[in-house]
Amino acid sequence: MLGLMLLFAASAAAKEPVAAKICGPSDCTTVKDKDTLMAFFEGGGPADPPARGVPWYTVRTAIDIGQERPDHFTQVVIPRLGIVRGEDPTEGYAWMSVSDRAARAYRRLTRGVEAYPASKLKGTAPLEAKVDEVVLPPKPEPAAAADGGGSSPLPWIAGGLVLLGVVIALVRRRGRPWVSRPASP
Image (cartoon, one colour):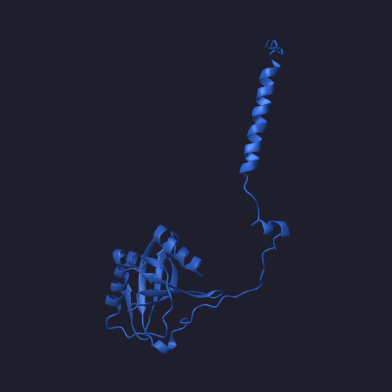
């Protein structure tokens, strides 16, 4: 769901919002000002849903995607709380915060427009996780569990370096004849 909202936000940033209609049950306000439309796409990440129903509005935004007709998507906005809700029929609702500038614009544009009643707001309960299957990690081997799951690789590295040094010394020495040293008197 959040991915869907971010897709719309990315689409809006890459393309152009051309209009938005903010509506209550009996009246709407249309916005075509580019700065205001761009403010609607500023904001933060995920937000908690309101603890209970609060008055709200719908926002239907048109995005110019370079085709004959603009693409549209609809969100719920609660200007007083500075949050918007997106909806995905398969995943439910996701709430996101908006910037202070967008919250001010929403409050200004909804002044005088009756809000939908709080009792009609859906999606105020946090989403419940849907679990299809629980998969537990494999149990550790008894030996691995005793020493914490493994040992340090430093002894192996040190041993490898010593062995490498011996091999290099033997290769260098092979090119020289064996020299015998006279015994000391």
